Amino acid sequence: MIINSQKRSFGRGAKVSLFTLGTMRATESLEKMYSIIKNAYYVGINHIETAPSYGNAESLIGNSLKKLAIEENIKENNWVITSKVLPNGDFDFLKNNFKKSLKNLNREKINNLAIHGLNLKQHLDWVIAGEGKKFISWILEKELVDQVGFSSHGSYSLIKDAINCEVFSFCNLHLHYLDQSKISLAELALKKGMGVLAISPADKGGRLYSPSDILLEASKPFHPLELAYRFLLAKGITTLSLGASKIEDFKFAEKLRNSQKKLTKQEIIALKKIKNVADEKLNSTKCEQCRLCLPCPNEIPIPEILRLRNIAIGYGQYEFAKERYNLIGRASHWWEEKNSSFCLECNKCVPKCPSKLNIPVLLKETHNLLIEKPKKRLWS
Ligand code: SF4
Ligand code: SF4
Image 1: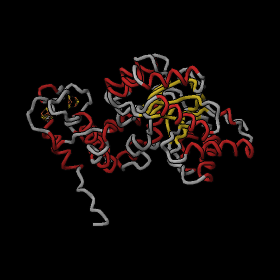
Image 2 (image 1 turned 180 degrees about the vertical axis):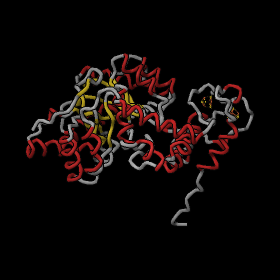
Image 3 (image 1 turned 45 degrees about the vertical axis):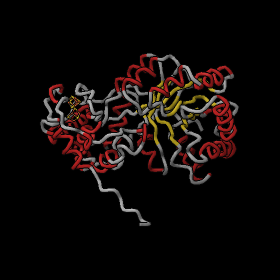
């Protein structure tokens, strides 16, 4: 059965559905992976995203696609596959690992390969002039992938450099309705003809599958997650990743599988209402994310911390904001390293803020609001 769903050009590669199946949460068994991929197919998804670091996801996918071809007559070549490699290691190591990925996926080649976690300048150097360059040239020359892209949790300027370095044809970015700080980078990438995948708009986008009463009320008649998806699709973001672990997770992907049109009047009104409610709750203390307060001499990530404050107070997503705040300093280069407690109250940032925010006071307040005591270890 052919499933009708809109597809978009993804860089130089095969066209992809508006939603991409992330496979990280379906690795517990072959039955689970098979059922998730089968459901993805029947809601119009043709793009699967995976990584060798997702346990045995690649071999589960390889076996599931084989089984789907036999049992459901879904051709294996109809799927667009994206896998990833981390930006380190030498040529032989990368080559051997990539060959293992192909074997696990039961493929001669895959469509897309993302250099995953291009978070530091040294990672980009590795791509442009190091062992990464050698590896990328090899896989493209051997036609083992159609195109190479990147994903990044790095700074705005690093991502901009990666988009402009002319090596990549697609990028996976953190693009969210509640965090629009990278939207202009996505627009830049799209303008250059690159494909753009939004990483986890449901979970990393503010746990929108579990919205606060504030968001639920303001979004009516839509669900906050549905609106967040529509916001990104209407912006032209090529595809949105969906890390499904159960059938219900496909609800909005099914509903929105042909929804690349502009925002409707009703959606615009609902989005405006969400913004107005948040503005009202934050009163005159909303951080507009302009980044003009940077650099802080003490490297405090002011906009990131105040964004979590916006999300907690303005949108009522406290649990999400707490989780992210308490991860600061604990995730190496995958997230920020310093929380508000490192602010020396030198006040150098204050005159730079066009919103006239008392930044050190707000940082302190955010810390008190979101910090959690270290969890007691069960074994001590
Ligand atoms: S007051 Fe704090 S956040 Fe502002 S510049 Fe000084 S150390 Fe950085
Ligand atoms: S300058 Fe002010 S509004 Fe802009 S990011 Fe910094 S704190 Fe937020």
